[in-house]
Length: 293
Image (tube, rainbow, N blue to C red):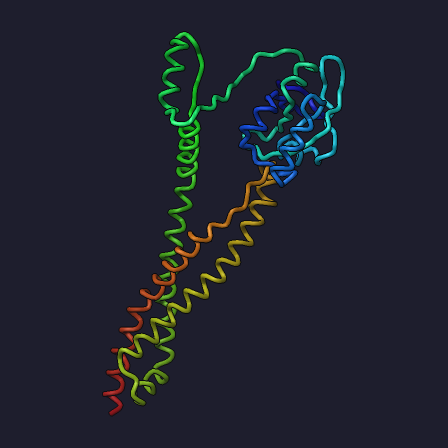
């Protein structure tokens, strides 16, 4: 139900809290312990209580233990907030009541959505087809499976961030070219140093390995600094910019394995970028050594 609240409009929804207790996949922000949130839901059965979305709590600066006063047909009524959960369906905010409490204050209302939980070993797509055939073509009802909906959402997100991946590839190529240019420049500046190494017995392979190692060290230092800056920027985007722009935050889950794999790949890429400067260094100083002789 769309209802006015202070200077805006919010959604008030009804859900069966007993179903939430046994089947819930809600991710609670407060209390952060899911078991504590479920105990609060259990204690609220039959009582005036509400759970609200993070967007609603942030917008109106409410916390667990505060009350939200809703305009019911019989007059304003305050509902204590027992939990706050993450939700990304709307930035307007949502107040959820137990279905029995909702009916008591807002009257009976036909449900707008239904969650169907399947027994083990049933194919969701097959059950979806059976339900649609049973309802007939005259019923204007849309049925989604969780698997399809999740896949569609991820497809849209991947399409949205495709340009980001392209920019990352361009940035890596530019960084590799920058390392090559830097090493070539430093080699030109260190002619005497490398000539001295060759004179005291350093082989061509040793000079090449030295330059490649320097390239790998540059890549490692860049990775460390990039990770530090990246984590800092992530916190700012998630807990500051995202909250101010959309009214909600997302959960921070560092992909450590992915970051480790990416770091190793980039370090290897920078090491390979040092191959050309390494060959240039070895060839140049052999020629110079012969010329000096």
